[in-house]
Length: 222
Image 1: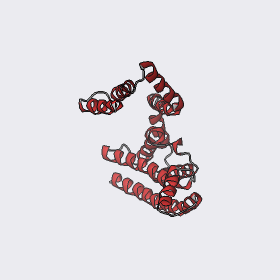
Image 2 (image 1 turned 120 degrees about the vertical axis):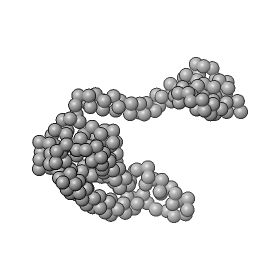
Image 3 (image 1 turned 180 degrees about the horizontal axis):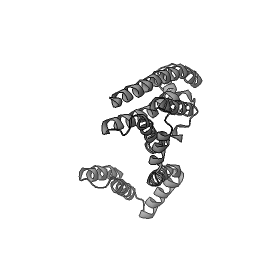
Image 4 (image 1 turned 90 degrees about the horizontal axis):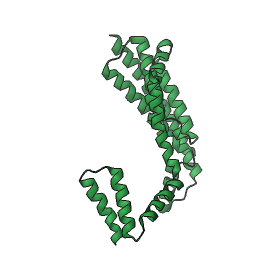
């Protein structure tokens, strides 16, 4: 029961506003010591958990890498590229990205792109540049609308594409939930029936993107 002091440490630490990382580490030490472990054994448990799950730390490499490429001007280069390609508009650009995102998600490659990896540094600046090439500088509201639409495109592509991949966690979760209700279904059947939904989602959002393109250009051209 003394090991439950770790829970109390978490509650008190968050209540007084301490750093969450320090609170969690402190709670682990309190629980470990209360359970009869020595400080060295607690540290060994930390090291073992980190070593077994070290793939988690790969995510921390993404942020500094994105910071470096943004500092080097990747957003400006993406925007200027689209300004030079005056024949490309924001609607078709995002439709192509939607197809790419949905297709890669259907293959299980969810982490190949995303808000941090592609939308913020590349796709959103390209979308802004595609509009600026036709109507000039954007106002703040339009710029935020373009960024939100680019982010939404990524969400829709992933959400409706990932269920096509049979080994995706959402598919396995649905199979397990149905099994508890006495309904047995093969995961491949769920994946196959996700294809019509993904096609419909692509068609609907593609139309929305083209309408957004036309609406935005008309409004800014006034």
